[in-house]
Image (cartoon, rainbow, N blue to C red; front, side):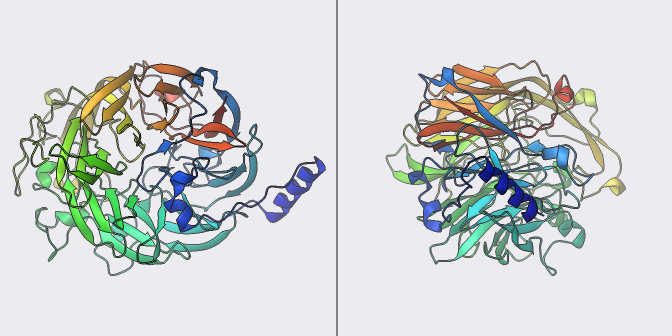
Length: 599
């Protein structure tokens, strides 16, 4: 549903009466424009900025010499929890990044409502339309992490499992399609019913001339899948499942029938390598979560990087980061693609991700060959390190076994007092919620994370209590306590494999996730991010010393973008989101605001 045409006409008449010019339509977002998005630094045409997933701006008008003069130039309410039409789903978290094309800005809130603003004036956001997909029930968490622009449409994958195409000029729905698995697939009906979409959509034209848009499923159980749909009408083009089935390669890494609800949901953002016609995407943790005893084995392809043929969805290769994952170390963050020089002198294309297990991995993009892993923090204790040849944790034993990691995962019968301390903490470590940034001029990647550790245990009840559609371990409750948590921005030189700088900020909010906005590096030598206490900050890209801050007064989980209009650079992000239940967190209320800064 979109704001009525009569209401829009009335607004247009009032605009004329004020002597203003009616907003003009922007040009179509063609496959060529998306392929060459780096040539339009004044725009931000896709969630990660470009197909390689760099989340980097070439604009430099705002730089480390003048960023202290940055100020809020306008704000606009975008709805969020205040306008929700369903009682399910909670307050929601504003996790999406704005998209900008030629002075028109698009946002999507946590309840899947999309708004378009005219921001060409530079001092206000003029609302043009608002589209409500009329979600009747939320499946899973209340959030969404992006939309996409394609030709004359805005593409959306919703939390209730639909694909929607919206006219980007009028805001009217053009088409709608069911994005859930068709009857006859490997998922039981109860698992199909609990599958949704929360990640950003990625549209492109394949080398074979096929137009597709990629979205990964989200859910608590069943078998995850990466879905390619036609951006013109939402029809399914291909679907690749993230758990091997009987008769397929690598089947057997789940005991018995546990593969049927193993999840491995690819809910984070995908990236696309145009030259090799390859889609890269990460997968989530295995289910039941926190219960490795129930599913001994590697649990493929959970917590992995997948390389898929863009034409067919056929898997080219995979690399698993945490076999038999017991700690919810899902691996759903953005896969950055860049040129890499190996220690033996080879220059090749690499794919890299900031993993939730505490390491930044770099792999050969063509083959999946392990190249290097860099510890994001110095307190990792769940493993003694990563094997430099295989890329697996040093304790890893192949086969259908319970992995003997350096710290035991949750175990049945263990009391809360017996829970071991696991570092790094899973809560607030990098996932598909927030993007890293990669500066192609320096080879440095930036990412936010929460430092600290977690005490984890579970209280077993009975096998009969197992509810596979719920995100839980086998009939148990999980007790998790995070300690010594602080917000961090980390800079790693992916060429040398060294941590160059770490910025630490103690917000005085214990036991919560504190840094979930990701990083935006710019050609001006500034890195932007936001903290859980509402502070939006600018850091020096070399030293990570804070140069400027503004407190928005609400939790920040949406990533920042940069654009320019009329020769002036702006920084924009969405503010608002619910927090966890400890400390002052419940008092930081979930708002949903577009905030734009300029000099």
